[in-house]
Amino acid sequence: MTTIRKHTAAVPLPDGAQLHATVEGHDDAPVTLALAHGWTLSQAAWDDVALLLRPHVAAGELRLVRYDQRGHGRSTWGRYADDVAELSIDQLGADLGELLDHVAPTGPVVLGGHSMGGMTIMCLAAARPELFGDRVRGTALVATSAGDLAPRGETLLERLQLRLAPGTVTAAIGAARVLEGIRQALPPSSRRHQKIVRDLLYGADATDEMVLTGAEIMHATTVRAFAAFYPALGEHDKREELSALREVPVEILVGDSDKLTPERHSRQLAEQLPGARLAVVERTGHMLPQERAELAVAALTRLVGEAAADRAAA
Image 1: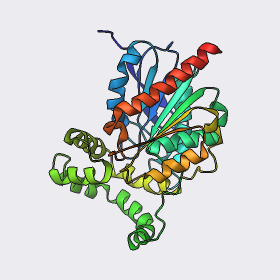
Image 2: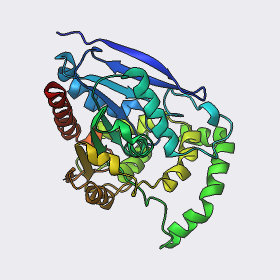
Image 3: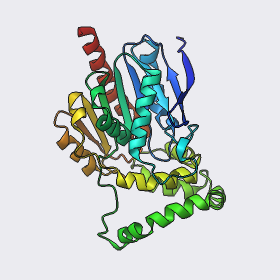
Image 4: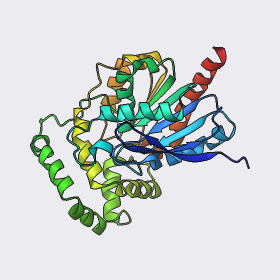
């Protein structure tokens, strides 16, 4: 059995925050693949994909980097520790840039982002377009959106969300201990908890094991992270700032049963990125990296192969 080099890194950010990253593979691999997770998740959301990628890492074809986004998993809050009022997805894009500068300062990079992780990549592309086509050689955007996520106010529920959202965020942060206590009363192991998670996030073919794993990952995220990033997601809008992504191959994947970032968001991305490859996956929900890990790996390895070929031809 081939031993894979693996280590963790604490990546320092300019405001004092640290990103917790896991790096697998050798520094001289031809391509680094960096994966960004979604809202209320952690790098563990990519575990199924990472497992299927191990033979490629062991063969020296790529180096794999997974990390916890700011305020998630084992990563810290930095300047937002006391006040999250200015927190944005743009900040996550800047964090990703710092991560790449730290763990992959040279050589081709492929980026994969699920949900908020895909938005993170879009924000990096808008802020540092010079990276794309030069350092960044490919991008996978999985179950994500370039904008238009805020409730439109077309239904009574959406109008209520618009009116209550700011107050809900403030209350959730202020009463985090109470809310954590309530969450403990309904643990991921409970059938009711799993039904809620399944109905919201998974497609028809998801196994009970997948749902339980996803529920446990989300349950490990703090109420503060849930509340703090909610308005930031609604404010995210990069629909007119995707030009840098046109410089690289892009794979877009979405489940046809995705309730959080429905198919229309991926189709809008494909319209803005006419060279992108779009896959709409049947009987699949928002947690596509878990539900269809093999399809995510196929897309990622295509991008890695193209990036390696470009490097060899250079």
